[in-house]
Amino acid sequence: MKLNVIVDERALAVDVPPHMLHEAEDFYRKMDSDMDHGWQMGPEFIEKPDKVQRCQIAANKLLTSLSAANETMITLMAGYILKRVPGVTGVRIDTGGEMLHTELLYEKPLSPPTTTLSQGTPRLQKLGKIEAMEQAGKDVTKVYQVGKSHRFAVRDLKTGEWLESGPMQTEQEAYEKRMQAYKRRLDELTGQKN
Image 1 (cartoon, rainbow, N blue to C red):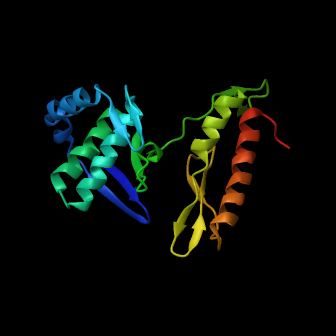
Image 2 (cartoon, rainbow, N blue to C red):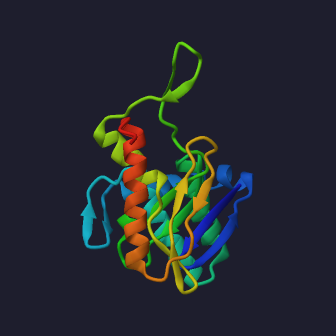
Image 3 (cartoon, rainbow, N blue to C red):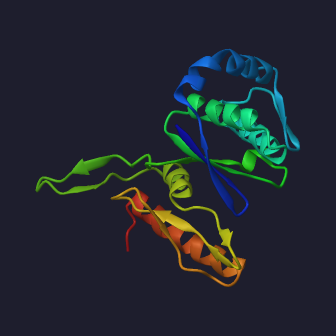
């Protein structure tokens, strides 16, 4: 199994042998037991880290292991994330000291449920405002830097593929375009297409 790890502008794939996921289970249980007592995640102390927060903690350990070039720990932490969150394909690790900003990445979108019209044409079922905001946040990435330009990506609802924006000179321009894309996706999910 592979976990794609994105740190700033670098991306790498960590290979985790399937047997390691089974063999490391005692180690992973010990990690869970340690986290059961709460964890300092950046400026915040989280008393009961949930599944995603536990993976954010593991991703932070992975980042530390990358800095130390500790291959074993890199593989173990990638394995923890893969084992605890089925369907995860990658992680974008926050390097600014805010563990809670680390993102888990998934191959296929959690597609909004569809309904079928009497003619047999599938269409998106409307989502509530909160659900739609959460889904739109997953379907439109944050702005990221590629070389000297800024970009973002939007997940295609039909194919599940990521479509990257064109390059933009400033982060502000990319942010504004990203917000327009987010609003369009939100309108699609709530059924308010123009």
